[in-house]
Each structure stands twice: as C-alpha cells, then as structure tokens.
Length: 116
Length: 111
Image 1 (tube, one colour):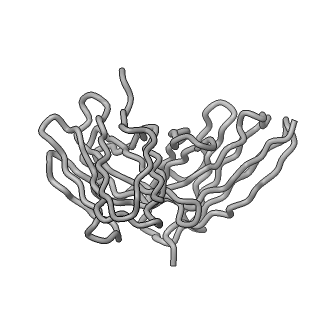
Image 2 (cartoon, helix red, strand yellow):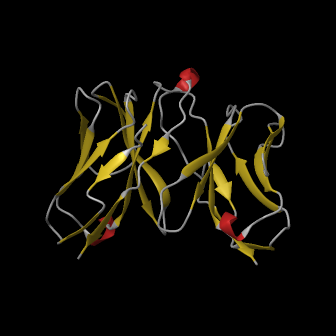
C-alpha cells in the first residue's frame, strides 16, 4: 500500500512568489492535514481537511491556504512568500475523522521549501 | 503555556543502555498519546500509541503514561546507534485531527 506522497520534494522560490504543494494521502484516507516544521518553532499545525472541508486551521496568516479534492488529494498554497516561510512542509493523512474514531496520522516525506 | 513540553536534549546514551524520554502535558483531559520518531532530514514515523495508565511494551520500546502526574515517557532498551533521532510526543486530539506536537527530544546513541 502506497504511503503519503508529496510533491515536489524540494523547491527554491524567491520572496514575493507563490508556491503550491501537493499531497496524495494513503488510499482510503479521507483526512489530510498539513504541518510546517522549522528548527525554531518545531512542528506546527497548519490546517486539516476532511471530505473536501477545512475543519481546523492553525495560527498562520491568510497567505497560507489549502484545499482538498473529491479524491482526497490536497494542495496547499503560500502566497507572497517571505524568507521565514522556508521550512519543511509535511502532509499527513488519517483514515478516520478524528476524535474517538481512531486518528493515527501518517506523514509524507515532506516538501522542503527554501525562500531566497 | 505550551500544551506539550519536551526536553530538547540532546540526550546522549551509550549503545546498549536504556534511553528515557519524557513528555509533560498541560491538558488533564488528554487521554492518550502518540510517540513519533524523526530521523534527521526525514519525516516523523509512528512508533507507539498509548491510551491507558501504566506501561505499553512493543519490542525494545516501552511507553509509560501517568495521568495523575501528567507525563508520558518512552523507554528504549538496549539502545542502538540506529535509534539516534528526534522523538516527538503528541496527545491524541479530542476531536478532528489537529495535533500539537512537543518540540521533540534529540537522542544520540554512541557506539
């Protein structure tokens, strides 16, 4: 069974540009969440989607957005990139809706974004 | 106040020793916890889930949950250099899949 797949794995962007990252969850998983990881801030929750609906959003500016498609694949977009957006962006998928229904999350390999 | 606190380390132990990693949490409502391992440059991978007080063993790994004292720990017996990684703990979210991770403890196992 294929794991969570993220593309692209590495990318370099210039300040002010925008970027779109893609995530394909494990087959059958309907929940997709996104995390940002930096050395200083650790692993921080960005947002979560379930059945094409954003259910939760972390404390990030509106430049960070996402969406989920009917096949559960998800994309996240960062507009007007800043140097501080350089990070590892991780996508995680889960079978259940969370809470009491069993919500182990499985991470993809991540997308390394460098903003110059 | 952070929901989950971990000592960032690095924690250095010799090969074959027991490594003890700790995580304290602030929400008394947290009922269960995940432990993830993250190798440098890689993504986190699940190694343990514990949902009740006491110990849970899986091979060389033992997770301990103490709800009264609000801490959860991970013991690694017979530590190997391949165990060198950062270990992250996270309480199971009460709803949805919004996880808050600790900052992680970096473990170095010296041959």
